[in-house]
Length: 113
Image (cartoon, rainbow, N blue to C red):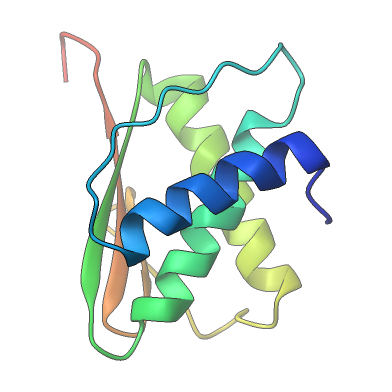
């Protein structure tokens, strides 16, 4: 799936901050059904592939585990499959997606978590 121009703008800004070690905090507002999960999944996919050899952790927090965290995990798995990583990535403990030595850890910010 191809990102829209406004999604690409956000993705480029995030990757620029990461690659140059700026550590910027980016706040992004996208309308409902505007592709937030898709943008996030593409960034996660890119980071997992960039760091699959040397390793690293990506932490993703959502307001709730169900449905938001579950939707995010499923979207990332779909993109990994789309880009040929089916059977290569692994799932751990129901909330960690690992590709090589890199992993995305999905957490909920719910008070009961």
